[in-house]
Image (cartoon, rainbow, N blue to C red):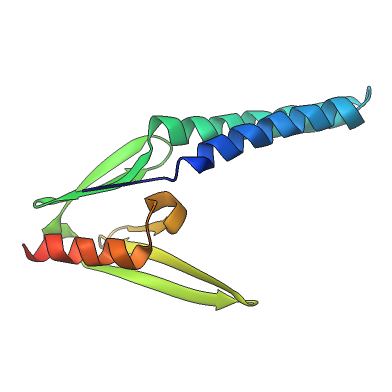
Length: 134
């Protein structure tokens, strides 16, 4: 089983980069500081979108364990025996509710949002539980 980011995310980041360029042309004038800030923001958005395009699968699982994305483009394979706990962390802050899937491997905790997984964390946690038992 694989869980990947929602396709709309890299598209949104690319649209954001284009919007920054348009806004820079409209409002930056000849100010080099504004152009530099716009350039940094555009590059950051493009790199972020590129990561989503190169590694869309954030979490994969099979009978032997899970594979998680680490860092910018890295991967780490975890056997089921290395995973101490899989749970959904729910928090409410200032009226906003957030849910994250946590995969606790002892030496590291991997956290995934619904946007990272393209599915609800509860559904992914249930699927992982079923795979782990099987």
